[in-house]
Image (cartoon, rainbow, N blue to C red):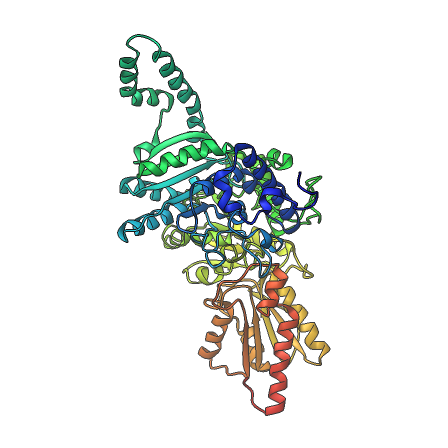
Length: 634
């Protein structure tokens, strides 16, 4: 017997795990999976992260690593938040203490982090496209490796997946697509594809029936001829049991369904799929949250978690009111008064605060699945015919519908309301989820109005304004989480001066007004009089009042949580030049033109010098430089 406390996780602690994985017995494999689940609970409960989805793919990931070598074979997880077990099996176990933290390992696939990660995957429905591209490259370059895409957690509700499946099936390229069917995305799956997969679940009965018939006929005279006849009639039998064999019609060989928690059964199908040397789909049935009762019962609640107590399943820090919740409650109130208001989202009813709306007004609520392009264009169609659609999407996912915003909404000046959740820095999910591009790409679109509430009160007031707005598309952008010290309501104008000052003008909007006000206080403590101007409408021209203030102070700074290109600061610099207003300096505080790293929001603010203290120190340095050198520029 091993000494107590020699290892904490047994097999998972072995340094040679990857080399012995293929030799482990079923009992050893079950033991390893149990250790992985315990490890995930122990660590995700301390760091936060995607829990339920990772608990559901433990056996599937172990099976994939038994059958394939990810140093050469290409393995893509879609959505990439299902990759924690993959990271454990590829040498990153000791890095999990810093999962999703600043400077730590990512919660998604990240090739810069490990050669075992085939490509970046943070958004859904892109895996089959990337996998097919890799398969084509392998063939054209005369190389020999396998390409596997694991798609699930609702990713098959996205249209890009079908574009790729259509192309991949027709290509004939050897490619394995593993459908991780847990009947969930973040909230419960919706749409025709979900119903189709439910029908496919009858297949085990069909397979058992076929095996039983063959076994019986093997023991009767003439049975071999009967088996051959039945084999030739297989398509007819399948068409009865499976009324829509969609994948096979697209050019894939369909294998399954198979128990996604039976490693040996999975390995058997994976080996068959590899030997077929053609496009193959393996349909694996898994349970989201498996092994942790709280996550099994409420997988949507444990999809993405903050730090929590494993014993009770309760968060360690009680979550307060947030912008998403305030938005949902106000829209619900407005919908009671206006029967034309509808809510649309893309697989995010709970994340966007629309769960209560969906219950109260099920016929006016539309969850289209992970299909942002469709959500935007459908909203345009609804608005054209007299409804008041409010399309609630995360900023990072709104990027996917840029063409629709231009072609289907803006050109025809359709009054669609966009509720842009998670705008700005989101924190631990990092580069794939930060909402730092929306200001730049929305301000380019003719006729678009973009409002930026800084408090709950302003969000409520601005939402009322957007519902009443009929002159083209209008959007609200608001952050993840709660409001700061600023609780006021100044939504009825382009902008407002929150603090008078004579030496420098600090300009900001949205949640960043809190850091800007902090900067002004620090400057005041250092003898510098700073004005603070808050912008509400990010698409209107800069008013003469603001430009005049800047001209008088001769110094200005713009603080915003977006990339530099297309930022308000960049637009202000252009406006000052066009107006012939020349000042000592204009400082632009933003995230630059690189992708922001992961980490706590406060830590990312510090990284980009967006926090109040950094802004104040930079302005103080510039002013002191002027006094010492007599030179107005730094």
